[in-house]
Image 1 (cartoon, rainbow, N blue to C red):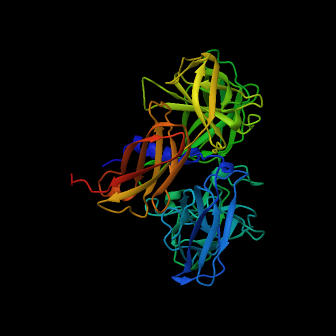
Image 2: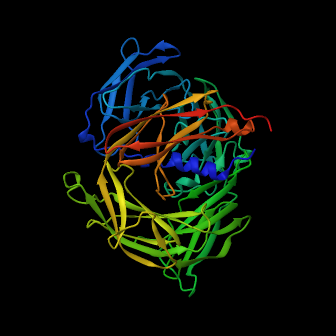
Image 3: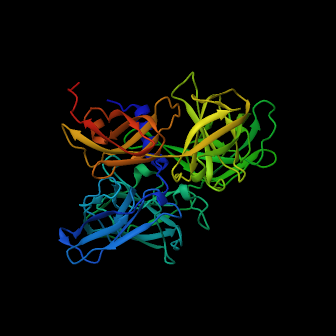
Length: 549
C-alpha cells in the first residue's frame, strides 16, 4: 500500500511546526513542579552525571535547569513551572541505550505542581569514526565539515548531530559519541555552501565517490572505534555553472536584487524523492542576471526569495538538469502578487506589551479554492510601529497567524478584521490585488488542553513518530497549531482562547507501510476550553492491524 502523500505532508507539517505550540507567560505560573529519575550505564547506577533540561522552544528569558546524579544515579530537578521540556544527560562520549527517534534525550510534559518521576536514562558507550580528508595531491583539507548520514533511511534512528565536525590542521576528523548503527560519511555538504573559506566542488563520500548510492557503509558497534575512514577529494568532476535571468513575466523587464533559491532533487533508496535546499547567497544583478558556480550533476529546481516589502513572486519554479556541461539561458518569470498591509493590535490592557516586540512576524497562508490541496505562505516582520506589509501572495483565501520566534508568551490571534469588519473565514485575495486596512487583534489567553495518548490492541514501534494538532472550530488556517507528545504519552497546549477545538493525534511508522497496513493512524476528539484553567482529554489510538488485502 502506498503512503498517502497528503497524509505524510500533514504529518511533516505537524512535526515541523511544533514550535507553534505556545505557552502562557511564565510570570503567571507557579514553579512548584519537579522532574526526577535515574541514570545508569549499562544497567549500573551512574554517579555525577549532569542532567540538563530546557523548554522545548526556549527564548532569551527561558530557564535552563540542571541537576547531578547521586551515588545511586538518582537526580531531581525542582522548582519547575508547567510546560513542555526537553531533558537530556550531558555525556558527550555516551549515548542512550534505547534512543528511539531521538538519541540525545526525551521530551517531558510537566503540569502545574506535578512531580514527574521515572524519567530514566540508560547509557552505553558511543562509538567513534575517524579518518583524514585529503585533496588529490595528498594535502590535508583543513576546516572542512565531515557529516554522517544513516545508511538505512527507514531503520535508522535520528542522527545525533546535524552539523558534523570540522577537520583539524592535519585534515583529521574524529566523530565520537555516535550511536551504534550503519553510516555513510561525506565531506562538502551542499547545505553549508559558502560557510567555509573554500568550497569543495562536489560532495564526496567515503570511499572517494560523489554519488550517495555508491558510498561505502561504515558499520559501527557499541563503544567501538572505526579508523582510516579517509576521503580523498578529487579535482573532478568539476562543478558546473548555471546562469539565467529573472524577468517580469509581462514586460520581460529585468528584476534585480532577488535571492536565488536552488533545490536539489534526489531519489531515495526507498524509491521516493528527497529535496535539499542549497544556500547560494546569490542575487540577481541590475540586468536581472545571476550565475551559480560549482553546481554538481543532478536534477534541480530554481526559485526566488524576493526582498522585504516586495510584491514580486515567481510564476513557477524552473526545473532543469545538470548533466555534463554548464547550463545557461534559464529564465524565471515573475509576476506581481497580491499585497496585504495592516497593523497588530492588542486587547486586554493589563497584559498588552508596552510596545510591539520587534521579533513579531506575520504569516499569511493562501489556499486555492479550486485546488484545496494547494496552499502557499509568505511572512514578514512586524515594524516597530506595529504595522506590516506582506507581498507576493497567490490568489485564494488568505488566513493569518502572528508569531514571536515560535513563542508568543501567551498571546494568540483572537480575530482578523478588515476595515473594522471581522473576517471569520479569512480574506479573499485576487491576483495582483492590494489589500489594506487589515487589523490582527491579539489577546492574552490562559486556557490550556492537558492530554494523554493511550494505545489499544498493540504498541508503537520504536521508530514511530507522533504529534498532536489542534484547530479551533471554523478555523480555515491550513497549518494547525501543533505540539509534541512526551515519552509518557502526555502533551500540553497552552495559551488557548476559550472555545471549541478539534484535537487530533497522528502517529506514523515506516514498519506500517512495509507491513502493507495504514502508514498513518490518527484519532480525534472535540474539546471545550475555558478562558482559564486546564481541560483534560484522553485520546486513544487503535493499533489493530487491518485484515490482509
